[in-house]
Length: 158
Image (cartoon, rainbow, N blue to C red; front, top):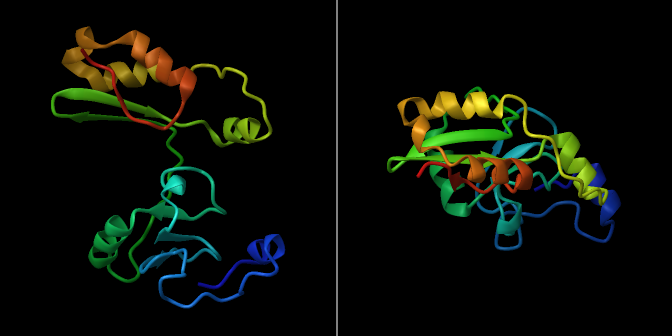
């Protein structure tokens, strides 16, 4: 791993290059995206997985990046999407996951814990995903997910 200029500035005492091995914070696998300093990689700190807390990298559990690494051919096109609202059906239940937008995350990091407005079009997106199961929706749970935006999937059907 080659540390970025911002990492070197933040921790000038740390080594500029960390070779593969147990001390490498990227883990055993990394997918380079063609952008300087941005990768999809494993991590030694599970708290950063699925969170906007690094310098742009996408962190994965070691076992997940290993599986992905083995399936992705060299030169595969990668599209990074900013999708703060995610909906998915699993085992007959609809799950909703909401993350703060980049602007909202920046406000949180600056200590502004104000309640955020409902995400644009949330009800429409939930109703579309629910389809024929719209009568099973738990709107209190949906509102709570919109307010907390903690990035944890929750069941929103009864």
